[in-house]
Image (cartoon, rainbow over all chains, first blue to last red; front, side, top):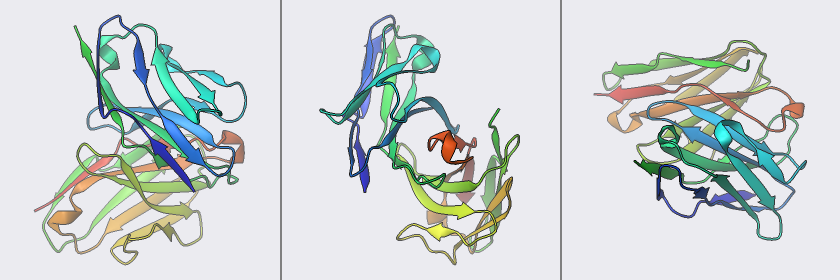
Length: 115
Length: 117
């Protein structure tokens, strides 16, 4: 079974500051890990994913995340926040299952950007 | 590429009626489709997983007779909420995956907001 814990349901950062959204996972097998972003009243958009290749994963919109097995973490970062980054962010985990992978989502982190 | 659409984007129905939500993969064939439910300011909860041509697998606690899922083709899955009640009001989101080579990635539709009055 897999689970995800996102620390901090709300995070506020100033425009131009570092964004750090935390995600810790639990998995009995080597996991797939994902970060998704959701804008109000919309579906989810994939930011980046880890599937056992490079541990530092670069995604869209300047985001990146590092898989740290020893810490069971997959924190999302962006060096400089932009107003358009304000949204809800979800970390998710799945286990490889030949195309039938079920995603388990964290509870989400709402990112607010302060002008 | 990998676009998933949902129709309708929002629907209001009266209590006791049924409503059907469509999920389509527009530019790829989806081996598996997933249906999620999201309450305001909460995370996504998986309702069921469906593979084309077979019965859907429902998560624990989801009533299969209330939430009917049909996956008739590799590009279309439907969710029918039968005898809807106000507590069924929610944001329903579907997603689709391609093959094992996609690394478990799911492509999400824009969601359907259901309001039952």
